[in-house]
Image 1 (spheres, rainbow, N blue to C red):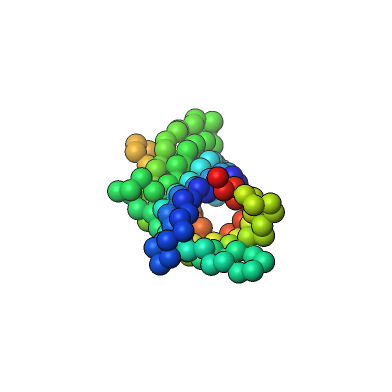
Image 2 (cartoon, rainbow, N blue to C red):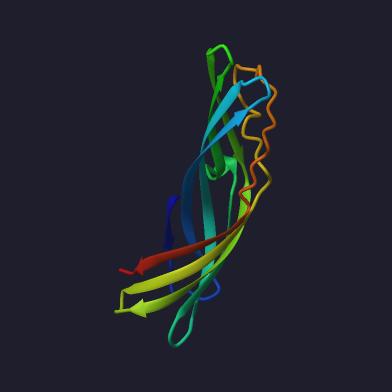
Length: 168
């Protein structure tokens, strides 16, 4: 898992700050059917959001609360690229790809501990919500020869973050 977040903060009250975040991760899955056909899935998922947030200053810490979202028309959202390889019991292999894009919503908060005037250490929590993804629904060419049960992927849930904020 890797990711980043950038934001632009300003001193004007009641006007939200704006940010952008991206998280990427990969996973592999292998499935064998009763006739010994094997299906290999290599899944790469990227989650991109545009965020609006407020910095709430306290005497010792800074608290950031915000919400974000992503959709296909903004070049954000959840993008899943699945490489599918089916190996039949006779050794023949068939390759295909399935690309999925869906929208998402998120809410988050960060607690920042100042260190010097321009650096803060942050601990955060992001809660993301989106529909389950059928990772093989958009394959281009191939229908499976084997009898596989492939569950939809549900990546909705929480994510804890740590980071450093640098002001200049």
